[in-house]
Image (tube, rainbow, N blue to C red; front, top):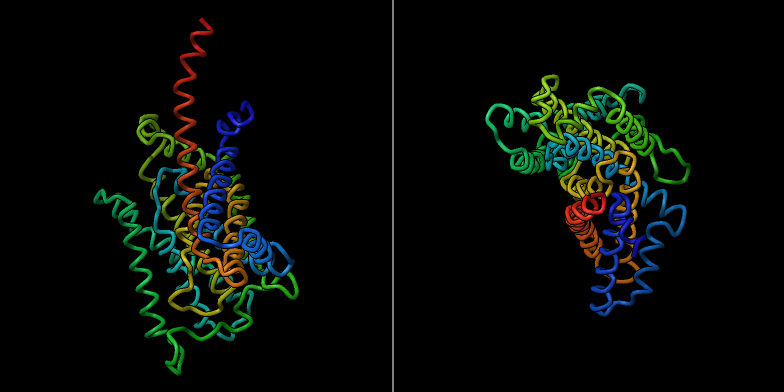
Length: 356
């Protein structure tokens, strides 16, 4: 019991407990549905980490955009900016990166690939910047504006692939494929894992250092902890921190879209993101907004999604159960936080009485 209490009190332990509870509940539901739990678990394992190909070409490839976009959400949330528009910013980044790639056909890769990623970052930042301006100038809540902008980006991609960027035959609503030179290089021969994963890990380390060790990072954490208190200190411009964090978060999410088109799909189409921007919120929350932990959480969710596809294919268990796990993880984290708050509020008087 003491060990369990210590886990609940620690942030990492709370995330572990929430994840285990989610897995237990979904396992019981799968069993109640008449599915073979052993067969489902084996298929989930084989589809995610059961072989080098499933791990490197399945789990880590799916984890890459989740890590990058998870960092975008984590950085925003640390400043108290509730950016729910990472999905739209990812789509904007993917569209911009693809447009740049098609326009630079024939250019050397050392020029075209960085240009594509930069275009994705600029598009993501611009998309987030709209919400930032609405918040600063008109007081529009970012939860509403960023959520609505997701649909603008979604229909914007639909317009592009059915209009100006559609492939020449007009048979499919998608663009031409990127030239080989305009793609992120594969880092393991025979696998699909690309340089984007290395970029994601480096970004996580850089974000952790930046938030923890720089003056700007301190301001971000100060505004997130209490904007009014930070403003009253006189040395923190809350509006400037919020605006800058918005742009940085959008740029990271846009980079996630750029990495997806240059490293995985090589073309733009309507369902290029299976909801990575929304899943990234779960990744950030499970990681407790810690950039280093985002890498672990991203790989975990990548394994779930890769394994879910295998579970549906090999065991006949709907992959939708994976999304139930993701939703329950979020609810579990919130529930455990509530328990921690309640326990802390009731243990403090007891400690004071003993000290007296």
